[in-house]
Length: 576
Image (cartoon, rainbow, N blue to C red):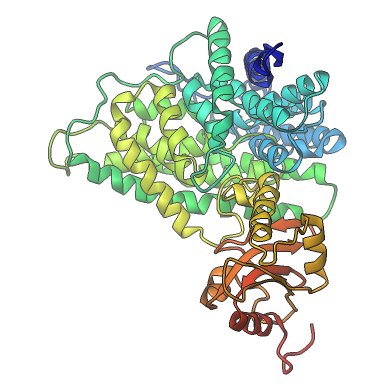
């Protein structure tokens, strides 16, 4: 007679996902190679031949620097407008979800669409992003690479008829693979794929093994094409060797946190402004491109990803004036490009901004610090990590990916302090903001994700059911039905306690108020769930209650009356 273990298949879901993660690694490497070639071709044709501007290259210590002449610069607005026009027409004609930065679309697919992306997205995202970046649009390659790889993961999942968690895991594996190949940072991007989902230091840890496998596979495959050296070449000997320098890096983290709080407001403020403009939506990226081109007439250094200028700053070849010029204009030009609907990522412009912030601070502090003096390149590397760590709320993965991209492992300690300070400062300054991070599809924690919050609410209700005093069995659907009709349910975990549902009326003391400032002051009350039209929500401190919500709570006898009074509109209040 066979044992239960012998009846199990030899290759279960775990081994199947490991094999599929390898496949996604190969797909991610292929996507990075093809997309990189497309961007380079578009840049040579549009920005190079038409605009007369070749941005400095990345990966060499002596990059060639050639700025267009005064007459040549007049072509730049034409080139950036043309790129925006072509990109906008393609996006809004065939795939509106391909606008903007692709990482956010990948996060939305994970949280809200069960890992589903339309199969046409990889091709359209690759073409439109190549046009945007190649024409000088201020955007990066990481967002498009992530969305392209996620789209390929969807195609694989559909072909194999995968569902649920397996499909979502392949989505993250595909994201990690594409980014690992593009930026030559396998460990950092493997962690980034499971950290970027949440803005509150939460990881989708169960997917980490698969993102690691996919990232390593993609890195190895891409290395055969693009080599194994880090993306940036930095001066040798950069290392942390004096505790006093931590103060300057702490200051850099503080400044990065402040700037990281401003960037989301700038980006989404520009997007909301462009969406209010009259006319066809496919003209908005052209308008954004025109404005960026006009800025570039006076400052062509802002165009493109900016990585070449980061390399020059590391090599000490930029004046303070050039550093400040890029620092001042890179953020607004990114907001104009992506906020108008241009296709590209936010990682590269943000990293460039962080590098310039670090370079400016490093130059300002030269000769004013005790102990051995660190070169400006050290502040550039740490600034790159700190600004994105704060603005994207990804302090751990950013620390590792920047070390891999630069080879600057000797700066891990100051980067750790700067990253955490930037994260905490940015988080504090954006509390309650409509767009607290660069990625609006991020959620604070698992409880806030539509993917997970239903599970938490069901568990809470099951706990309540197990505490029923008379031992009768009430199934979950019946329990919710009773509560919707206002029937209180006795619970045995507190004397005389009841599970109640109260509807929040417009104009009441709970309408538009968060849980912490209202319910937290009522003794003997424990909020369990909020039933809202779009689903169930697990109430937490910052959760804002709305009129029409039905609040489920466990209450003591005295707390029930207090809750009812809070949920009702005062008689003297005007009707909405």
